[in-house]
Each structure stands twice: as C-alpha cells, then as structure tokens.
Amino acid sequence: MATPAVPGSVPVATPDPAEAPAPAPDAAAASAPALAPVPAPVPAPTPAPTSSPDPAAAASAAPGQTPASAPAPAQTPAQSLVGPALPGPFPGGRVVRLHPVILASIVDSYERRNEGAARVIGTLLGTVDKHSVEVTNCFSVPHNESEDEVAVDMEFAKNMYELHKKVSPNELILGWYATGHDITEHSVLIHEYYSREAPNPIHLTVDTSLQNGRMSIKAYVSTLMGVPGRTMGVMFTPLTVKYAYYDTERIGVDLIMKTCFSPNRVIGLSSDLQQVAGSSARIQDALSTVLQYAEDVLSGKVSADNTVGRFLMSLVNQVPKIAAEDFETMLNSNINDLLMVTYLANLTQSQIALNEKLVNL
Image (cartoon, rainbow, N blue to C red; front, side, top):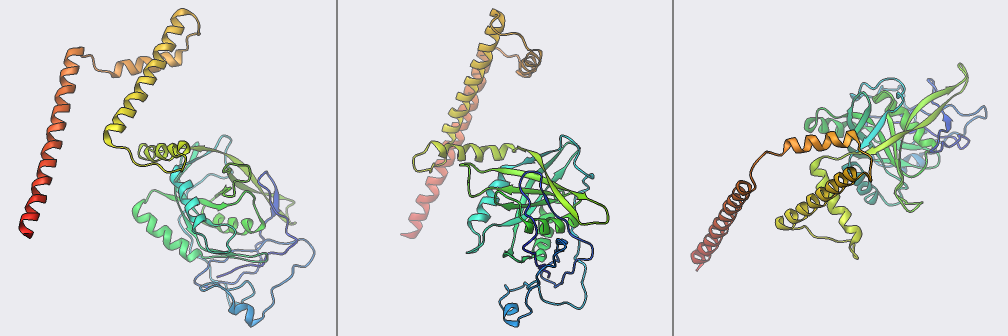
C-alpha cells in the first residue's frame, strides 16, 4: 500500500485544459498487499513537507491501508490489470459514449458513500473501436482522501475486475471516474496509477452536487507537457461525451423520465396493455409526421431531402405487401390465440389454488 503525501503547493488542475504537476520516476512510494502504490508528483523547488512518523498517526489509518509516512524495505511492483490497446493520444473526433447504467451506478455509489467522504471514485469498463470509446460498466473503488494524502484500495479494484471478466470478458479497463465538478491534485495521483493499467486512460467527472442546476458530465485525457529534463506537467484535455443505450436500457430510461411529470417523483410499472397502447400511439404520431412531411414536399412548402427519401423508401420496402382484409384476419387470429392462452393460464392457476385449499381442510 502506498499513499503518497501531496504537498500543499501543488497547483490544482481545472476542468478546462489545465496544468498539474506530473509524477517523477524517482518519487518515493511505499507498498503493501492491500493498496497499490500511487506515485507522488514532483513539487516545485520549495521542499515539500513530510508527514510526521508519529506512531499515533500510523495507528489512526483505516483498516487495510497504511499512512503515507509508513516506511517499507522495498517496493513491490503492483500486478498490472489487462487494459485496452488504446492508441497514443486520442485522435481528433474521438468520442466517449456513456450508457445509462454508468450514471445510475455512479449516483448510487455517491449516495452510499461513507460518512465524511467528499467524493467517490471507481473504474470504468467498456470497449474501444476506431472512432469512439464505449463505456458500458463500472464499479466503485474504496479510497480515503485528506488534504495531504490519498489512499486507494487497488487490491479491491483488481479483484472486482477479475470478477467482471468472468461475466463480460470483452470489457476492458478504460479509465476511472470521480464525482465532483473539478480536477484536484489527488486526481493526478490516481490518474497516474490508471495510466499503468490502461494506455491513455479516460477520466470521467460527474457533478453530483448539481452546482449549475444540472448534472455536468465531462471526460478528459491527459498529455504530458513541459521542458525535457525539467519538471513536467500534465494537461487534461476534454473529450466529446455522447449517450448511448441498448433497447433494454431504453425501457428503464423512458420509465425514469416519466417521473419528471409526477408530483411526488414516483411512478408505477404499466401493464402490458398500456405498453401496447403507448407504442401504438407513438407509431401513429410518427406516421402522422411522415405523412405531413410528404405533403409539404409535394406542395412545395419544404424542399426535398434525398437522405430522408432513402430512409422512407427503405421503410416502405420493409413492410410486407398484404391486403388489408388478410392483415386484419391475421391480427384477429393472433389476438384470439393470445387471449385463449391467457384464459387457460388463469384457469389453471385458479384450479391449483382451489386444490391447495381443499387439501388443507
């Protein structure tokens, strides 16, 4: 375990491209089985204050963690986790695509944080392609943070990643997240560790304090800058963040959005018939919009768009050519079959319940 001391003179990075001191190769760090070492950055020419080797201070450390001043005879290299083969600096146009489960998990971990904790951190998992990084999963990592030191339980992170690989072997480590609207000097230390686990990792910030009345979500990558042979700095460059979801996630997102129109922010699950009615209403609205657009183009109110025309032609070709009477007969037949199966299921359930009552008499 290693929890390097952070000097108070280290500049704090901001969400916009800012500079923060970069870690030096010869920074001293202790090691223990529970915590992976996080190297400390090289401070300004002014000597950095050191932690007092008071035994009482060492005894006040959290279980499984060692204070920054604890000595170690030799540094044991941390076991590296398998990370994605990201290219060097992100090319222009690289996009970070977030799934709704990521935001829900981050907010949940923030609400369940330990008493006195200012923020929570965690590992981001997902996949990488040529043009985007898709974040599909995450998990929180325990850590302790103070003004002078930060301790991260990377042994827990390693075990959690091994468990995630058994369920989703294609998910790789993409970076890490932290709640808050700003990047601190401790973020530089934690980012340095993830730089050894995944080339060019992503740092995601989620403003759970809602400072501007909304949850600000930003993603960054770091690049080294400075004079070779001198003190180097790290600049966090923002990336484009977009939101993606699977069809199954869309159901949950739509249900959560309905709570915005509920006075008590609570809404129940709708029945199957209500879902069918809602889907039919949305399809009818979409068809009305398409018909109105076609009429406007024919009347000359709107100029024709070749892209929209191709989409409409593809949509029409996907609909099977069938007479209206045959379609109505087929639909009614399927509905009758469904109602018959439902009736038989309810009848069977009633017979079983009646039989149980007769047996208990």
